[in-house]
Length: 385
Image (cartoon, rainbow, N blue to C red; front, side):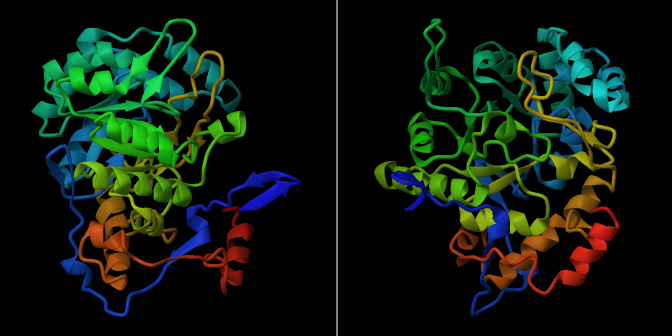
């Protein structure tokens, strides 16, 4: 235990840039690696999930990513369920001047959610050959979850900046995930959390998966605005420890999803080595030609009426979903051909499966990304990168 001042202890925690994976004594051909994972009895070929953000997922992208073997989560409280013709609104959000972005978004998100559009979007994904996975905030889940289930949704993600098994309020509002999982027809995944105790409560509530991460996303400003969060490597490892304890007690293993803070393929490998079964990606998928953000990316807290906790960032459109997942890479920054990067890392670590990758040796190595890279750093600074 370290101290930030006399008598004030503080635990040292770690992000992805401060750790590294150690190659194993025996390696495996990357082509022999199995990247599949399972949640609520459904198997996905790739351990990647497109984030429930309006700049990332619409019907088109959900179908395309499903066909490539991944999962995409449609936000039922976003633009897609507020407007009959969402493309017109997305054009307006992308064209807004930087100084007016928040006010334009706040205006756009004042439009109420339409119940009929909730069902229609789910049906469109299903009829297009995609796997309909949807998300809501805890307060909206009792209303929107049944509508999505009736239309054919297969999984429900109940997500907020920080989630616990039971939220209490002196104003009479309470949300119990235990009650929600028991009463909802859909398997309920829950996020986000970053601590052992909170995760253990979610596992015990019967959720189908737990999402880990508070504020690490590229477009999220929660850590700056609220001062709350835990670096991802430590957060994932702590939640994985809670999963192991829950498995010991019940015999039930619940998947973990690392949500946010991943910018390159190597960080996907690190997230899995820390204990994740899959990763949720926002800014990386916002760069896809199929993404609805028009080269921009923003978080769902950006248009908050009272306390915006996000910003619109320019990510540029760099390639198709297939380029980003399977290459060939057309950029050298690690943001494309993510699955080949993961396969190669797993092969080096001697891991045939994601479960075996979770046993890879992890070391604290803050110099990993800078050691011997002086020329690269100088060139990138000179290029304004």
